[in-house]
Length: 252
Image (tube, rainbow, N blue to C red):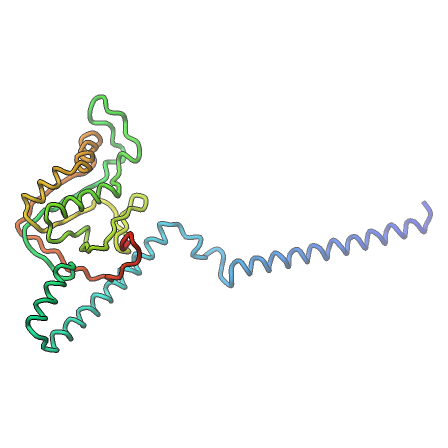
């Protein structure tokens, strides 16, 4: 090989090597820029977007619980200031009636307590001829809770409470996975539903509801939890959350 050609090839190798080095550095810089733009100044490993849905729901539930406590305190102060103004007795009585009808005041009296619970995780068919259960056969669904609540309203309930929250006209019972999402807070089974009203009428409405009858078939077949208790003295607290209507579907 002539000496001149060897020099030319070595020079070409050096040029190609420099070009590859520049390309690598340019590509690395581009990757750092894209990563910075994506993270927007945050640590990608701890970004909230990587939290699971359950973590986000629990976080929001805790925040909503704190906000509701603050709102209840402000409502109590506003009520005290209103009473200090010495309003006309007729106006005070009318306001009290409106607050009671809107579930903002406590209600007390006889009523029913209905408890629903998931079946044991290892449950099997309890009745001959019934197929073995699937996962969805062993858990409480949104429509099960809604059926009980609606039946109690039809039975003339003066007030209904699910878990520790009083229901109002815009309350929406929603389920996310195997948890209940109600007015910004998350609950796990067993689900306890209380209603104040005439116990005979409430019980008759529950027993006559077609959706509840269907649920009771699963109670017998797979062991879903179901308990109805009468009480001569129930006290349901007044609703203390926001009454703002956020969507046609009601508050979550």
